[in-house]
Amino acid sequence: MINKETLFIKEISTDTDLLPAAEMLRRGGLVIIPTETVYGLGCSAYSGKAAYNVYEAKNRPHDNPLIVHVSDPREAEGFAYTTKLYYKLAEQFMPGPITVILNKKNNIPDEVTAGGDTVGVRCPLHPVARRLIKLAGVPVAAPSANLSGRPSPTCFSHCVEDMKGRVDVIVDGGECAVGLESTVVLLTGEDSLKILRPGAVGKDALSCVCGNVTIADGLRPGEAPLSPGMKYKHYAPKSPLILLDGERGNVISRVKEEMKGEDCLFICYDEDAEKFGDSALTIGSETDEESHAHRLFAALREADAISETRDISKIFTYMPSVNGNGISPAIYNRLIRAADHTVVKV
Ligand code: TXA
Ligand code: MG
Image (tube, rainbow, N blue to C red; front, side, top):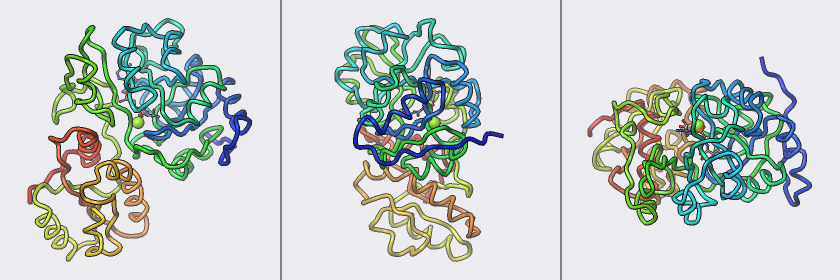
């Protein structure tokens, strides 16, 4: 049973406010840090014991490696073998929502990489994250700061909900701008890479820097996962989530029909909310994909909170477009896993 005294750092005006968090990271403690994607549960990437404690705090399976965060892309030299393509990607996308898998050096303990020879490197855009890593003076290993199986936290209160009493410090950096986890890429050659997890840095953007961009087989339904994390069912809300695939009018009729007999929720565009009263959870205007990404995990958490007091039998949402570029493949990827691949044609 983990029962820690958790310090909250909410007002950050100067570096001094971050010093207790930096000190805690250096000493092997657990510190939740804000990033532009989702909040991360951080520890010193040089401490195997601290990394072990991160897995315990999250109830995370020990075979799923952690990403290592740096305040400057060049800091990767300290623990990984960088390549020309890494620096090309860094120049274009770092700091930002991308994680690059590199071969690791020996100073990264096995607990961080789950025994593997590679390590994910990420330089977050959120200024508080970079300040904190710099002040700590160590690279910071951090998975998303949710309890394993819950949606990733995109604001301070989500972190408190899952992790109060399980970590030493939670730093408040406001709402995460992107709201979905980083794009994870594996460098497969001098000018080729594979997307292991879609995120805000899309295939088109990567193709401008790298000649040959492929998408991992494991991302398609029913295929063996390449990224260790992909094999776990993720983000599943307490009531089953169903994706309705069809025209928007058909989706709305179907949800209305279902709601006649049972108490259901609808994760919907702002434009459709009025018709569904307190069963609507909005994610932004229809065409605003950035807002859908930004709001998705919060909506799934709100659905769980409502399920505590109402007997919610199903949660519905639209099947997102999968052919788009930008962030839409990432939205699809998170939703299809949250729905455990339940798609109904309407
Ligand atoms: O945006 C993000 O990436 C957030 C913030 C906190 O930085 N972090 C995050 O970490 O999402 P996590 O642990 O929840 O997801 C990391 C993903 C997992 O699917 C993991 O399996 C994969 O990256 N991964 C990490 N290291 C890897 C490696 N060496 N090889 C292949 N996949 C790796
Ligand atoms: Mg995660």
